[in-house]
Image 1: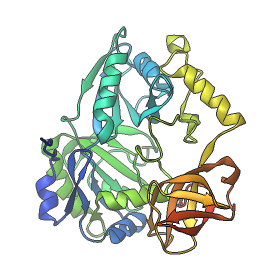
Image 2: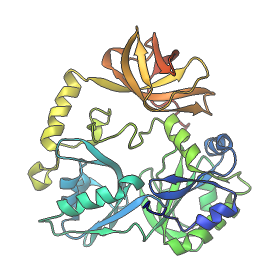
Image 3: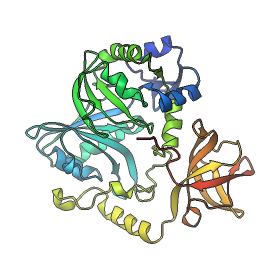
Length: 377
């Protein structure tokens, strides 16, 4: 018997807006409200409003919360300043990536607390791993997935829209930082994070406040051209920004070094005598990445109009040299794009003679450095 889909606190509102819904990691989520291309362009040029309440929130607190996270994750969480956030990963003992995460440092020096945000499909896996790894630490791991709704405002107009509904110091809120505040009368954790390549904010609120906040933001953003956005344009936005998606660019078969994200692994931790889960395997992976990386993650831009999809083979000289992990039409570039792992010999930007096997035809593609799109600061 199949498990029924979970619904966010905004489910009825999405349906009233005519959203096309889809099963995403066991959640019934809005895929699009109208044209995903229009929603994409709105975020790039104005602003978009997203329901991200499917993400998994886990709170880690207690005197040894930082030490636990230093042991359980690959990042140096003990150095995260109050009110700041860090992108990191949780790996298996063999170095394989279980999930990529954002960790927010909340609480005070006396009562440290961290909010770990996992991908929807991996939330239970991350919760189980953190709970298991907490053994021996004076820290509590709490499942807070039902305690939060998560709404994101993304795009160049998002600071102005937010300033009209909050007195929080948004000008002083740096990228990858968060502060408690009130937005449209609703208590929220206001984070300057996002997954679109644009400036923006993610608002963690109690589920019962989600609909009122969504309506207030919709009204505040109307003059600025804000529109509701679904998961379809969120994927093309993150793809253009070269941001990895778990299950595509990141899997348990890959280490952070295989994914070109070795920078998130910190071997110089001082807590736990430098021990953390996966350390030995990751040290080996780091050496391999320096000397003979098997494949590298690159961008591909189509010369034609045919769109590559995850799993399609990348070819050169009649040989298979890699595999597409994500592909889609790029609304910003006006051409199909893809992210792929390719043999190191073919990974340099500008490498010619590379194609993608699309249903038996080798479509020509240009190798480029990631990201495809970078916003103007």
